[in-house]
Amino acid sequence: MPQDAPLERLLDFLRRSPTPWHATANMAERLEAEGFRRLDETQAWQLTPGERVYVTRNESSIIALQLPSEPLTALRMIGAHTDSPGLRLKPHAPQTAAGWLQLGVEVYGGALLAPWYDRDLGLAGRVHVRHPDGRLEGVLLNVDRAVAIIPSLAIHLDREANSGRAINAQTQMAPVFLQGGESADLDRLLRTWLAAEHDLGDVEIVDFELGFHDMQPPARVGVEGELIASARLDNLLSCFIGLEALLDSDGTQGAVLVANDHEEVGSASACGAQGPFLGDVLRRVSAQLGDGSEEEFIRLIQASRMISCDNAHALHPNFLDKHDAAHGPALNEGPVIKVNANQRYATNSATAALFRTLCQEAEVPVQTFVTRADMGCGSTIGPITATELGVPTLDVGVPQWAMHSIRETAGARDVAHLTRVLTAFLNRRELP
Image (cartoon, rainbow, N blue to C red; front, side, top):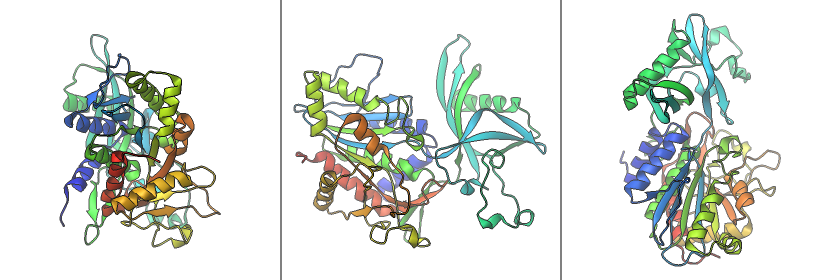
């Protein structure tokens, strides 16, 4: 089964990004390799027309900018998010039962819980340590091997297991970690892993944000490799496609890629879409490349456009009745415009018309998703960004199955489809 270069890069990015912090670090690494300069929010900025720069916040959200060489009059913005539903360790995680050390977890976001059973689980996230001189440092940790598992209860002991019984996250989801272990073993193991990954031997662990991740690697699936199966496709797939489009663009127009953390839990944080991160950055850019007035900033925002990219629900062959019959997106049939009359998505007819025009110009098929009228609808960073910033916005995404599962599925050809459209968007000289 042949693998083309973008899909190889995607699988590698997914494998190396078990947490929002790792995804942000990997995106930053690639940006720097392509000549982007890192900015520090605590320092004064000196920006030059035509320059390529990026900035992070909380080490889990990132904004990359291609500054135009001509006067700054409009920006072409792509939005995504770095976080995915999963299981996060509680601060005092160790607990013991039946001779096993287990780790208490909190469910992050709207995770499908059942698929987490019987998976080989690694551990990853951010750890803050104190050095002997008192200096605090945050470092990334990725225990890239199976160190835990959540075993199912045998069918013989629960004959009703297949009847759709609810799962109790407090009492039935604690991963099994170490036989005969004690509470202090977690601290000891974290020190050992930090020493191995960062050569940090003489440090005190002060705090951490850690979560479990599936050790099964991303893969091409299907007789002809027409599917991609992986953890965290929602929404690292959009992060990757947005980054590919930014790097593929010709650099003539003002372009922005923003990937926020905390979308899965409402976006209400300093680095989330409801926070001031994007507005702060764009105001500083406007002040550097314009006259810095509020009127000029508002004119810039109203002349700009935002395409919020977050995966869409593909028509499921086993659950056809879960879709409106006229709005069931298919895998590998192009990106999906997401519409909701109650503004759970930010799309309106004007922004949808822009995207349909882009798809036509790029010779890419386009689809539409509207949820059934008798079902609720999820949301994205699109309406939040539009509300906070005022920029005309639409919501699109690659269609996928099993959203919020530990392993999700999307169409391999749709990666190129959406990348091509977003690249055309970033290169487009005129915006309606």
